[in-house]
Image (cartoon, rainbow, N blue to C red; front, side, top):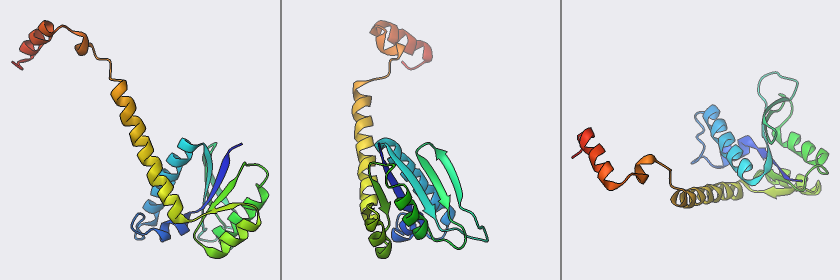
Amino acid sequence: MRDLYLVDGYNVIFWVPDVFGRDDLESSRKKLIDLLQDYGAHNNIEMIVVFDGMGTSTKVKKEVLSDSFAIVFTPSRMTADSYIEKESYIRRNEYRSIYVVTSDGPEQSQVLGNGSYRVAVDDLMWSLKHDKKDQHTFIKRNNQTNRRSEIGHSLPPSVQEKLDKLRGKK
């Protein structure tokens, strides 16, 4: 069993304006989705990002990007908070743990009553930052030990010099 993160998308975007611009919400949503997909994939976490719906839609719009990542837009009369509260209750037996990402106090209290854990937006941002650092460290360490296998590295110096001469390098 793995963990499930239910993320209040606009709460995250508006909580961290220095990371997610408020002028272009489409770009901010895309950036948040990219960060969460990366984090979820590296940590074997299922992610559902929920955005408050707009317009006159009466149905939940769910876009499944992979078996472990989905984006949800709530209907016009339902908030992301109420969708997350409902899902955290319905799915409580399907996952090892359910984490609700929001800095909305009343929502945090409600999901704690459902047996879910709350994650403040600042804590999520800290986790995303450190996960990215861990990825860079891993890649850097493995790139140093697994050098590319190029034919030029195995040629004797005399042959390399002749090739360089033909290329006009010497």
